[in-house]
Image 1: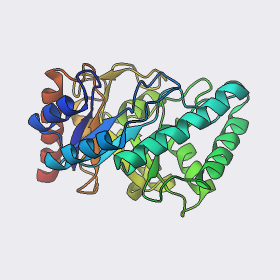
Image 2: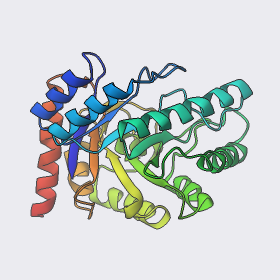
Image 3: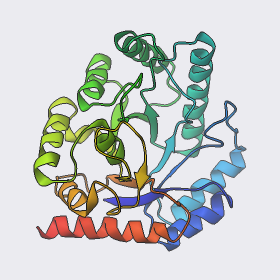
Length: 285
């Protein structure tokens, strides 16, 4: 498995890539620009070439792009919905220009229109967007959410339903976020609980569809529907839960990304070390 972090933006791309390589990152996830802005940057071609060469130099791959937080393809308000579609397209274009094979997307929120209606809009929107996909080399990864309220995609069943509705030929995969799964009600802290959760994932999604894992402990109670990430082993999921998770037959090239607190600090080294420990214990089991 390839371990990495969600790369901070402060300090610039080159500086952060160099630091990531120095602490042992093999893959990275990034936002292209401000994740809370409707206007993503359009990097110059020469800058993109330099970024690609830098990643090759340090053998960091794949580069994963996360859509801005504002994107909601199930939004109830027309203006918000259309702005989300435009920002989504711009993010895909930036990902293609950066040479990224994966773009991570949350299913969004129905905003009060109703779960069924929100899910139908999300699915129909993706169908339309895929007609003008910027590159056959980009795969969209649906990330499970903490659920609750008007949120979509909080269960593995709901994510699986989206995949089935769009068909096997659709350029879709899944990003499994452990903290979100815990907050949505899945018990990942024990062998028994994790098996139950993974049985559901395998049945409705399939292990082979999980293309990225966001490895985050949780600072909130299970089923709280609150998205509060914690350092590995310092939250409610705990060391044992992650050891059990890595015992599953994941692909050797599967990117595992940390989105733990204080990214860009000494905590990155601590959390990366724990990832390697969990994976090592799993191989020895």
